[in-house]
Image (cartoon, rainbow, N blue to C red; front, side, top):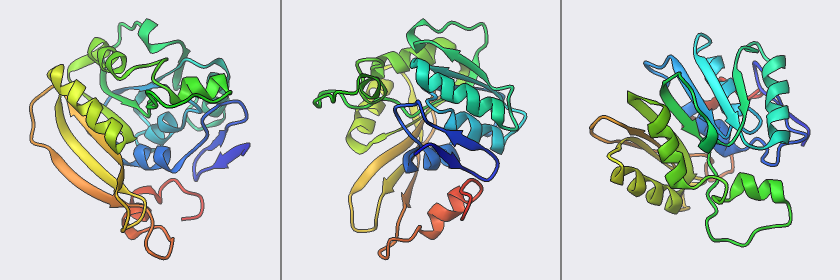
Length: 232
């Protein structure tokens, strides 16, 4: 898949190991951008989440980090060709990222395979396995660059999401929002989209189902994502 066209931008993905996915689109639409001026996208890949954030709030200051050189080239091209070429991109491991800027919101669709067998594609392994960015390192990076009232938004498979939330709570972060995602009504929850905060708050819990029994997008998924999909 060479490119993916959205209503206001296009994603070229010739070089990136991880392509546009339902997870990414759904997560980019779900993230709360309220009271956000400065956003950091960790592991931007093709730049999808950064571009979705800018479409939603064009005045947002967005910084994107990507460790993989080839994915960063895709992101650079996608930012340049979009209505928001001012998105700042750094090709660097987040463990090495330093900034005088502090962020209101940090977002990530991070690697999550911790113990599964690796494939032959080394770059895809970096994008999918936590060797390159562990959950603990991601939490530490957030704490390092976050404003005191900042939020961290993440999407992970269900079990990995539970592990991440537990680790974050050990670092005095609080679960502010969580969305339990099912692919179809009869399947178990497969994904967690969640937002952690440095400040104590009650947890707002919601649910989302992507497809109905007939394999069509549900009304709630359509309502969430229709601003982005070209034909929705």
